Structure formats: C-alpha cells, structure tokens
Image (cartoon, rainbow, N blue to C red; front, side):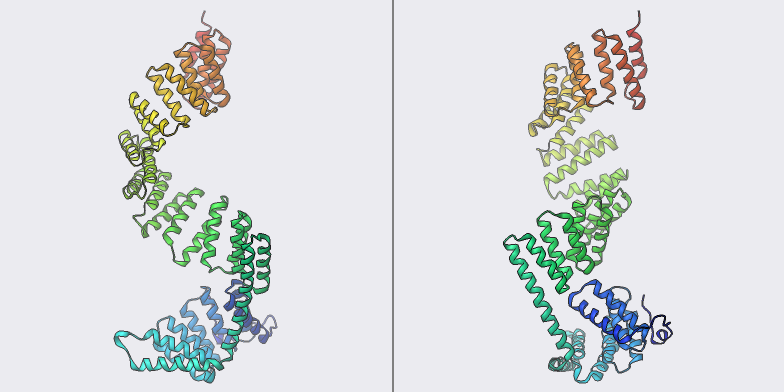
Length: 554
C-alpha cells in the first residue's frame, strides 16, 4: 500500500540517476492513454513512471495526487490513504490547484463535505481563469448535498454560480480542450475500424475482419475492445481455443470489463474441461463486480464439484442460497453436493424443497427420480423410494427411467405382476431401452413365463449386442428352462467374451459343460469362477468346490 509523504520521499536513496522531467512526461502520457482507453497496461506504466518521478524528485506535487488517484482506482490504497497523499502534494506545493482539487474530490467521496468544500474553493481560487474543471466538479458536489426537503438558497446560489462560470471558462481551458480533441480523434479512429469490420462481417469476410481488428489493436491502442470483437467472431466459427486466447488478451488490457470476463469464464468452463482452476479464478473475479452473485456462486459450486472439492462446492452453493433460498436449481445443486459428501439427510431435505417449488414438471420429475434413488440405495427405504418414483411419474409419465426404477422396487418386493407391467410401461415410452427389456426378461423368468423371457432377452441383445448380463441370463433360460445346454453354453461364452471378469458367467459355463458331459472343461470354468470370486465375492466358494469334486466322483 502506498504511503509516501514529502518528508519521507526526500530520504529516498538515489541509486539510479533519473530525469524527473522525462519520467513525469512518460507518466502523463501513460495516464492520458489510460483515461482514453482504460487499458490496464497503461495504468501500470503510469504508476511506475510516477513512482520514478517521486524517487528522482520528491518535490513534484503532481506525482503524489495523480499516483494516489491511480492506486485508489486499482484498489491498492483506500480513500483515507489517498487523501493523505494529496495532503502531501499540498505540503510540497500549497498553491497547486490540482492538488487541492484531488484532495477535495477524495474528501467528498469519503463523505467529508465540509472539508471538501474548503478544498474546492482553494482549487478554484488558485486556478484563476483555468478553474473550469474545479468549478464544474464543485457545482456537482454542491448539487449532491442539496436536500429537497431542506433547500438552502445559499447552496443553490453557489451551485448555479460555479456551474455557469465553469461552463463559460471551459472554453478557454486548454487542458480540457486538449483532452476533448484527443478523445474526438481517438474515437473517430476506433469508429472507422469498427465500421469497416462490421461491413466485412456482413459479407462474411471472416479472415479479412480479423485482419482489420488486428490492425486496430496496433493503431488505436484499444486492445481490449478489438480483442473481444475478434473473440466473438472466432466463437461464431467455433474456433474456441483461438477465441479464448483473444478474450484472455482483452482481459489483460481491460480487467474491469465485466462483459468480457463473463465470456472468458463461460467459455473456459464450457469448452476447456481441463482448465477448472482457470474457470474458478475467472468466476471469482466476477464476484468483485457485485452483480449476479448468486448465479456466479452456483457456477463456482459446479466447478468445485468437477474438481472433486465437495467442501468448497457446498460453501459456494450455500452462498448462492443465502441470496435466493427458494431457487429450486440451487437447492438441487446443494443436495447433490451433500450427496457427494455422504450427508444423505441434508441431501434429502434440499431435494424435497426443490420438488416442492417445482419450476418445471419434467425437471422436477428428474429430481424425484434422484431422490428415490437416494432413498433406495443410501437409506434402504423402499416405501419412500416408491413414493418418490410415483410422484415423478405423476409429473412426467413419459420418463421411462422412472418406470424402470419403480419396476425395480416391485421386483425387490417380489411383486412380479406389477414389476412386469411397469417394465412394459417403460418399453411403451421408450422402445429402444435395452435395460428395460433385460429386466423384463428376468421378471418374466421368475414368473415362469419362459417363452416370453426368451423374447425379452433376445430383444435386449438386439438393441445392445454388448449387454453381457442379457447373454448370461438368456443362457440361464436355455439351460434351466429349455434344457438346451449347447445354446446355453454359447450364451455364457459370449457373456465372458464381453466381460472377462464375469464370475457368474464362468460358473454357468461350467454348469453347461457339465451337462454336456465335458468334465475337464467344466472343472476349468468352475476353477476360474473360484479365482474371480476371491477377488470380488459373489458366490459361495464351497458350493463351487463341491461341483468340481462331483465331476470326478466315481
């Protein structure tokens, strides 16, 4: 934080011989460029040059108040510190009008209107005929203090006097006119490049437009604006990496351009899945603008979830909910974060709240499905899961996943008739759901509907030829329902081909070989089932061992 007084600066070591006139001119030029274009690099250059000026000659008043202004704007110092630096400028040059003007302005910002008025009057007095800016700023300050309920004639008179005299004197204020003409010249150049670029875009001159904007970056110095335009063009052409590079360059030159920063954050999150930390940094920077903060926290929460940082995800979602507690999407998001953190009761509470708000039937049906799965898988609460699935189907009867999950509950309760009917309902909604056919086959098999189970499993395989469980279960129908051991063996071997670690398929293949009288092959597959079962227990090993012993029991 800057804290340089005139007395302290006189004690600075002169390690390098600097020309204060040159550094001050450099500082003014960079400051002027920054005021015209708002680019961060110009601000940094101006700060550096003013510091060099102070180092070479601590008695130059201008360096103090201009440096204070720039560092206050960049957030490096606060108002109190800025006022102190302006007072240091006054101590160096008591009759410097601008030093009093900056001091008055900062005092006004700090709410000290009495002191600021005194400084404005000194600024007007010492500037004489060049006091246009001081008079106009003073009139603006007086206007902000006028209360319609307690109108002061004296203040009103002061306001009108300084406003009118300021307008009149601005005609002969060279500083104001100089800056005005520079603004006009610079704005004309920017407008010309923008006009040409827009015309080329209109005739689909993609590459030509980029060339124009690149030239504008070099000639006008408005890098941020034109880099952002280049990024917009590249985004429309789906050249995301190059677009991102342009937005980054715009951000470097204009870090206070919220619109560009939002583009940068959104594109990084959407198209750069491995740049999670970068996206988090951009969204965090957006919080400094104090706009749409709940939505920004919401996006940050999802980024932390992608990163696997459940704690910070919960913090972000909580901050979003603090601003909008009845937002169903925020409640759904924090519920998922709680779920990832194994805090199931908290997850259930927020899922229920999201469902109660119900912004959209189809979306809420999905939340009902998730809630049902939490009850089923985490709490083993079948009745609550059943209620959640049924509620979801009331909202969206065309959600086939809800039909499948509801049928699974019926299967778990051995309610085969309802399970079969509900799996069929899922198939009516989505005839391409191989999982529904596979599960229907199991329900039909357990309900002794052998031919129907055969049809269901074959349909599941037709829809998904890589469904190893469908092949295994179809083999069970052949071996135990139709006594077709050869066809059963083909199914089991296909299941093993698709999934070499499928323990049950090895065991069933052993059974098929045994029934075909191929004892050695049967023993080999039984042994492989034992080996796999030791890695992931699914079967009772002693029963498989008994199978092997029985093969060679004379």
